[in-house]
Image 1 (tube, rainbow, N blue to C red):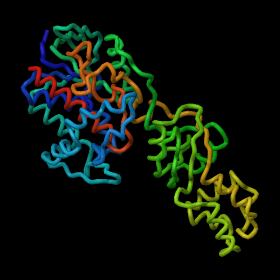
Image 2 (tube, helix red, strand yellow; image 1 turned 90 degrees about the vertical axis):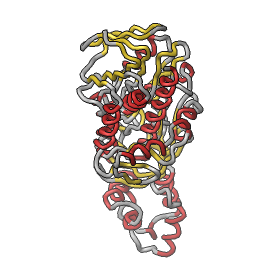
Image 3 (cartoon, rainbow, N blue to C red; image 1 turned 45 degrees about the vertical axis):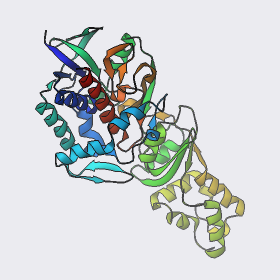
Length: 399
């Protein structure tokens, strides 16, 4: 049975990063990946450009039952540490917006960088390898797979979450945690589009492909960014962000014109441009298609009216419907399109410095499988790099 210092389960962002860092310190490392190739989620991320980190990554950008847990790992390996690796490999990149860093060319640049570093460090990677049983003892770990049996002194679980099953998402890491008697917090899809089943479904479907700036609020959190109408409901950056805070059955508050006090603006426009049609006024704020479809759906009785014909009460009613809209999503698109999985291995069971299981210090959980979930915009990659580095450091110190 081949014996290694470390076996890493999962060849995603966290798994490859941990493997290369451990290998660079002289440890023998084996990475086992159940998919037919490594880094599938890396390749699809950022629309194929990989939003590999965020310049402004802070603990406040993460959701966790313990909001302080991520601080240690993130202080050990910062955004600038990863950027230094990217620059060392000559990978061109740019800031898209709000600190989000993307490859100029392709996500392949980031994956190839990780694989090159693994290769130089002597890391062995086996793909299309399904782990069947894991025997965890204090003196080491034994794994039986459909390829062979392997053993190691340490096991790193970097299996990711349930999001995007076709890219390799699975619950295997959670099963291993439960096998060890660890608490696994309730899981749900995060950074995911909303779907609707009420009258808004047809409205949003008719606007599919149209986007507009809006503010979305749920559970005391507000995000202002683009909202994209889809055949099933709503997507876009603001929707993905708020989805991680929204709970099924809750109303979603939407301000469709966050930069305009609609009531005040309509009343003022009545005085200065009274002959202007309401629809024309709306098209100055929204895309024409949205303005017309929204009026037909919400207030067909005023579709052809001028501002002069609107009463003050009607202006305020329109303002409420725009600035203080209440929606009730039927749910989300679920793990099929979710970028991340919320919840996971309870951080109370792990060392925040090393990511090791407190009761089984030769087993480590890193990346998405842990109850640490970032906002949209490169934050989840930064958690993958940082948590992986923390574990690799601990493994190397141990040797």
